[in-house]
Amino acid sequence: MGVPQDSREAARFYGLAAEQGLATAQSKFALCLMKGQGVAHNLADAARFFRLAAEQGDALAQYWMGFLSECGKGTRRNPAEAVRLYHAAAAQKSSWALAQLGVLYEKGRGVAKSEAAAAEHFATASELGGAASLFASGVRHLDEIRVRSAPESFTLQLAVRFLVLASRLGHADALEKLASISSQREVASACCMGCSATRELRLC
Image (tube, rainbow, N blue to C red; front, side, top):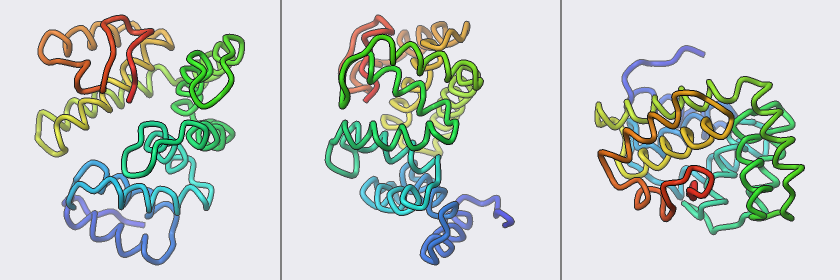
């Protein structure tokens, strides 16, 4: 379906289609709600539409609903449910979900700790081009902050999350970009808590 360029018109367009039960539209409308693009920033409504799309098998919605469940944004924190949703997205070859599963297996969050499983998920994410995709998404979120098209603190958290994952998959420029952000703002506060070491930084 054609997509209007104006963000408010796009959000309205996706919202109407989402109410008709179309999974792709539900996922895109949830993104608009999550980022406050063309519609008021509302994580609870974003979670509702992501959940509806995820139940229909939309991989992007499964990833983002996993993120919201992992971090307790717009819904109650539930790491085990996040793992389930990430696995569903990973089964559809979502490199983002695979990379995040690597972190969760490494930390034992929502799943039994397993270095072997972590390494396997990181490797598969890399094979699917996850490093470049995650880095591009991190940079895109930083650009959204520059043009003020999304809430700054939340979008900064997303940017750091993607850049940290890209660095874990070996992207050469991700650490440099993270260092640049850290020199300009308090990254740890944007990401709840963490330290300067990439391996230990909390991603939500």
